[in-house]
View 1 (tube, one colour):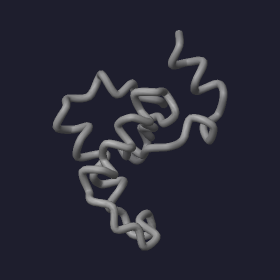
View 2 (cartoon, rainbow, N blue to C red):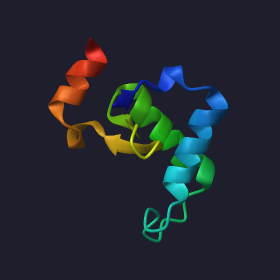
View 3 (cartoon, rainbow, N blue to C red):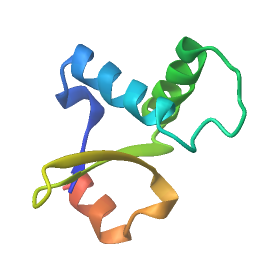
View 4 (cartoon, rainbow, N blue to C red):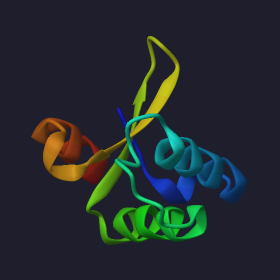
Length: 79
């Protein structure tokens, strides 16, 4: 299930993004400041290039590139 970013409280969205950009294996030696990485992800969400994926079974949220999610999920988001 996809969650539109505007449905999350600002603080919750920020924590989700920070968790994503600080995960082990996501920096690949990138020493870009945290705030810059957070802003990049926020822009990708705003542009619709990235989406928030919620798994009801595990109760977990993930960020993903729009191109990597099933097309039917994107159609459900538009409905």
